[in-house]
Length: 315
Image 1: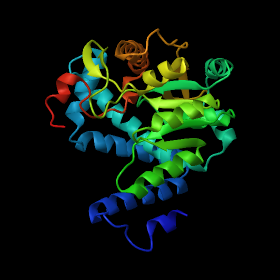
Image 2: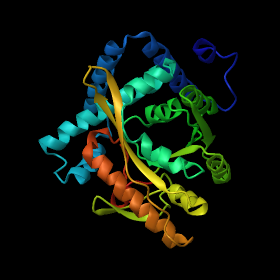
Image 3: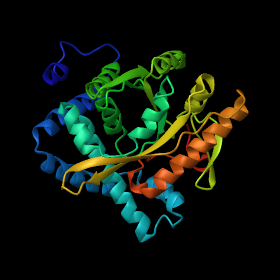
């Protein structure tokens, strides 16, 4: 299957050579990582992450982000060590994303260990779906597979990448992990609400506001904007929000895997306007900050995030 993707009958119209090479690189990386033994692949990811930390042009921005989270200077030894770990964590995420599509339900039930599934099931027991807000923290794809392994339909939204077949490639990966993917296009909220009404678990990445037009919140003591989608859907449906932090761990038996901490349900505040959305988004930001502070090196945001930083960079 991957070979057919690698050697298509012809290049799709509008796809430049550079984008085509990037696409092929992802596909080849996926194929190769599936062939490596697990321990060797993790060592490879560790080495690539260390190399990226030394060579990346984004390193200074990563240090600035982590400095805000930790309250330590960006050039301190503590923050610089976290920067290296952040790149290693991100490399692990890509290895796991590409390689673990071959794993089955039993694998994720074994490797993803947490007592907090009960919080999701308690919300589902109210008779409709559940909304889980997550950040770019740890491996959120593995968390989705864990939810699916418990027999729940997990739906989420993904940005439509260019080229389109790159988007299709990632959608196929996530579908193989048991997720239903909707494109992040105008009007998609109606379909997400329909899935929720049918009892699905909706997972929403709730930290990066790509357009910078979402509600303004305080995040680690400074102003940032967050996407308002999770809050808007919760207010429209009346379904509470669960905020989850996902973390990589090595279990006591030596197996690599993940765990999660999920907050108690955040009930929908009264009102339906911008104030209600802003209030609920702030509560999401507060819970995400708590989760990120536990393992800041696993927060995979390497771009300007706070308003002060974003103003310095042309959008």
